[in-house]
Length: 366
Image (cartoon, rainbow, N blue to C red):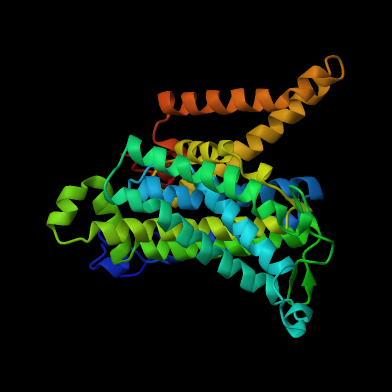
């Protein structure tokens, strides 16, 4: 029996019903409202500064989704995810600036969308390469192998070799009008925001559907107990490497998006702190939850922006505070992680889940 509220006595009878996107009309209404806010409300009512903040939130969430898949769903610890974002960014830039595209693809704005897909594939394959040690090691040892990916990729290959192509020194400059999708040139805060919103929505949809599939159930089984999962017939090697590929693919897409949000691409955009930052995002947002990646990104980016705004009046009397704001930001990042691990270890997604349950069960708040 269908209902708006799914009251007591109505149950799901199969897996498809339990995992359905639109279980009630109320949920459908909430999702439509959310899409309206994201695609219409924010670009229409906010100025360029806050739209750029929203773009940064989306970029952070795109990077955190891959970390969430590896750590939260597959139980594979990583501290080198920024390397795969960098691979995606540089793949996209090299394809746009160096590849001899047919003129009609440049005129019709097809080159950049194609480069996003190829960037995801290259970053996914690069991620699999550094995911191979997960076949034999896990835990602390896997952390070290993913950190090796960061230093080998960014500090050695990209900085010493790829960045030198064409005699550009350390940065690839992107002239205005270079990034096009169809007839639209991506050169304003609003157009960049729309690209982010579309890519992030697609990534969430794809990941949510993957988690409801055979692969998603295998990842969770491996996370909970890989020995038991193997005893049940799950090919843990295949599914671990698949997790690394999907996470790397999403990181590559995030990096390819970053290309349209910067005038010059440099290895400095992908330092090891970004990998640590993304892990902190899912810890604050909630490990093992897609919403956690989004909530953590909103919290971290918006709180840091508000902190910077709070520091500005102090800078009038003590300018050194603004000059050293990077250290203040790092301190706030560490304090936020400590506070959440102590007082809310399940993250913001757990609080969201509690709020939804309270609302759905009201007035029976048991």
